[in-house]
Amino acid sequence: MTGTAALDIARRYFEAWSGGDFDRAMEFVAPDIRCHAPAGPVMGSEELRAFMGPFAGMVQSTSLLAAYGDADNAVLIYDTATPVVAEGPGAEWHHIVDGRIVEMRIIFDRLPFDVARRSHGGQ
Image (cartoon, rainbow, N blue to C red):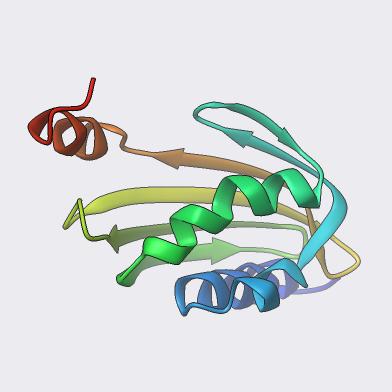
């Protein structure tokens, strides 16, 4: 890959899942992806689908705040709005090989979701 190829793939993945087309987003993910998520490791595309799919399905809107990348790596910083949280900031690092995301690290602020859960009687 050359130039900003990884950034192009990462942006296409982000635009697909944040735009409501999770199946399209998964086309950019390698079958053996390794994802480092706040809740722990997510291994393989089917586990990623089970982990990310429900969240992507409840996202009402996103704002891409910044995107950086080179030939092999990309970083996206964004904000999400869901029915329970108006502002849920997150970031993702992607390592891309042969046009597919093979490794991902997801970082997001869990506090707004924890506050919303507590205010609705959850633990």
